[in-house]
Length: 111
Image 1 (tube, helix red, strand yellow):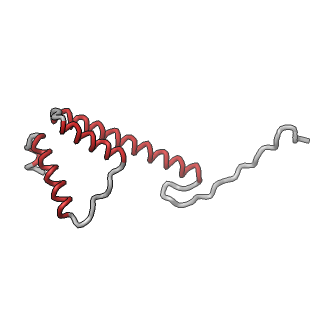
Image 2 (tube, one colour; image 1 turned 90 degrees about the vertical axis):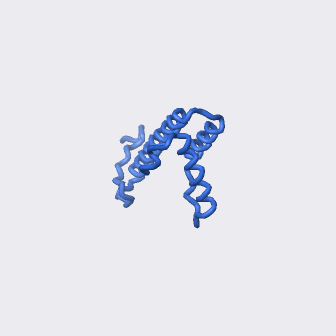
Image 3 (cartoon, one colour; image 1 turned 30 degrees about the vertical axis):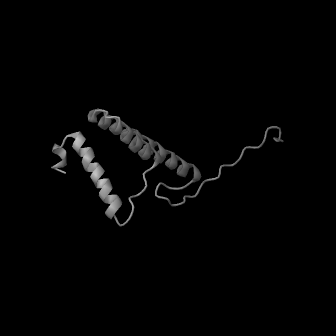
């Protein structure tokens, strides 16, 4: 990591290409498949590299995509947490008892 930190961005992309080549040739298993936003960011980065966009622009764009991905994952987790709360599950996955509220009588049924 220390040696990578001193390389210019252009050479870092060459290192990344080499790592991907070595992974495809020698890795016993496949890396986990990235989610949709990660795949989009990787395709965007590859397209920018093919068009010879400045490395600082690419790294800024990729950084922004990473931030957007983290925000969306946080929103998704919050949605799952709300869903668990609404269905009566605890945050740790255990089912909790859900209190049943007495239903009010329909209008016109009061006598």
